[in-house]
Structure formats: structure tokens, C-alpha cells
Image (cartoon, rainbow, N blue to C red; front, side, top):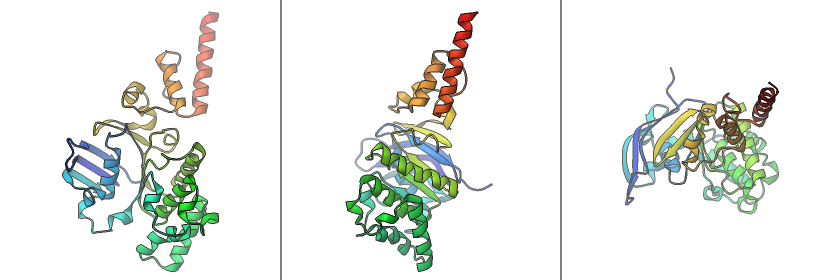
Length: 291
């Protein structure tokens, strides 16, 4: 049996000078190749978890740590300097925070050069990343002068070009319009089809997470409040809403059908499923009226 990709055990973290713990008593195991949607209101602990997996906590933050955070069976603090970042790729909500180069091409190549890859392999990975994220037309442009959606695809492609085994996305589409947001998630969908990669997706807007996530984890007040396969996760919508998480419209409609006893089946995650539930509800209502 293989080790989990990520294993968080009785984990508590308190930032220096903060009044309370950012996360407390977290236990979470993520299998290799699994995609997790990590959701919760602002301040629930999502970014702390992301930074803990990537080693930014405690590497670049001061505080008090209890428990363990393991990546492929090794505690993050036991990795040599820079070694963990070869395994874990982190994409932030602000892509410019990751930019270091003057052109998109140089930005994509920068991380691969730091890994010491040969020229031929860099060329192959660059071509693959540009195909995946549709960036060929932008290679000579300064990354600071392209659109927000293009910037986020560049930041994502730069991380993917380093071929991390784990990809963490901390609200990568928070500042994007709906069209640009959809394009970013199209890249992630293609990636899941082409490679076995472990993903942790942190997002406030859940419409694009649902088709990708195997499981959903709800955080609140620094604790894990709910952890379930994606469809079962939405069976209790009130527990989710009370934490400030808005379910996708399709899921909300399906929940209303079940709450009002118009439909007794499982939650719908997709539009065609909700439409089928609505048809069955109407048919059952019509049949009852005709009796």
C-alpha cells in the first residue's frame, strides 16, 4: 500500500503574535492522484493548510507548530532546502507575486533552469506547457502587460512545467472574470486527464471545483468540519451554508427539490442531472394529481 501524497496528523499552527490558532487538531489524508476541494470562509485556515503542505509554514513564517505535515511519508521540515518545492507546486491568487522574468518564455523557463534540467528537456516541457495553457502567442510578451486571465495561465504553466507531483491552487481565479476563470479550469481538467497528479483546490466559487474534485473538505474556525466524497458532501447544504460557503446553483436547486420532498434521490452535481430530477418531480406530481 503506497503512502498518502499528503498526511496531516493532529496538526495545530499558531502564528507569532496572533491571538489564537490558525488551524487546530487537523487530521487529513489525501491519496496519490486524488483531487480535493478545500473550502470555507475567509479565516477558516485554508491558506494556512496550503502553506503548510508547501513548507512555507514554518519555513517563512514564525509561530508554534504541533503535530505533523507529511508529503509522501516525509515530514515537510525534514526535506532539504528547495527539495520539497520540486514535489509541491503552489499557485497563488495573485500571479504577479510569482513573476521574476521579463518575458513569458523566460518566466516559464526560470523554474526548470533552477531544477538543472537539460536544454532539450526544457524545450520539450516548454512546448507541453504552452500547448496545455495556450500560451504560444504570448511567449515574447512581458508577463506584467498581459491580461489577468493570461497572467494566471502563465503562473500555472510555470509551475506545471516543473512537473510537481502535488499541485496546490490557492484561489487562483479570485481576481478573474468568468471567461478567464473557465479557461484556467479547462487547463486543470486537461491536466487531470493527461497526468496522475494530486491536487488541492482552494476556491470560493465552487462551480468549477465540483467536476474535478473527488472529495470536498470544509474548514471552519481552523478545524475540519466536513470531509466527504463530492456528491455526498452536498447532502447537508445547511451545514455548508452556515460556514459562508455557497453551493453551485445546480446543487442548490437539487437540494431544494429534496428538502421540499419533490425528489428523494442523491444530490445532483451537473445540469443534466438536475434537469432529470426536475422532470421526475413534475411527473410524480402530475401522476399524484391525476389519481
